[in-house]
Image 1 (cartoon, rainbow, N blue to C red):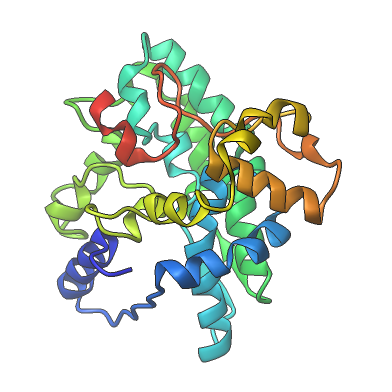
Image 2 (tube, helix red, strand yellow):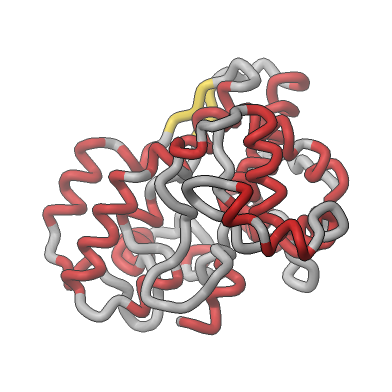
Length: 267
């Protein structure tokens, strides 16, 4: 989308490495129109999974229709393995951070890996996730909890440090603060999730939201955006609410939205 910081930083990398990149843009309206297809494809009503899947789904669609590429690479797993989420700064101890990291890895199939696999496979393509290579993950998890936690106010510190002084990435990219895929596709002034919430608020009334606990079993939506996703999900997959055990949400803070931009003030 216009003003995307991900595009800005991707241009830096392309210039630094002298490589040819392609930019694929979509409007908030085009993204919203894809929501139903995304929910159908992923079989989920998780908030952040749906937000992030829209961009990936549309990119894969473009690649299928406009190139002969069959295999894509994606960065899933790095935040879970290397403690890249903003909320890891709030972990009370290295051991608690380690426990949370391992739990996130175990549940990847419900959230980010589900997104990557389904969003790409829906268009007849394959996705590979190098950060989840079994030898790399085994080695990384063998390191002490203290080595793997955020340091110097920087999440995913050890992974970033391993690339420093190698000239592979510009420092502005290498040490860039965490930006979720679902946020980085849009401008900081007008995040993707705000576009979604504005387009959804007229579709779900206050009274509908207040009765969500009576309307839905299992994980109950607490916002109009979450209600809308659950509503569409139930139309497509009635009674299958147990496909996810909970919404993906950060730990060690009272945030009610999974956006990394919302979490920045917890750092």
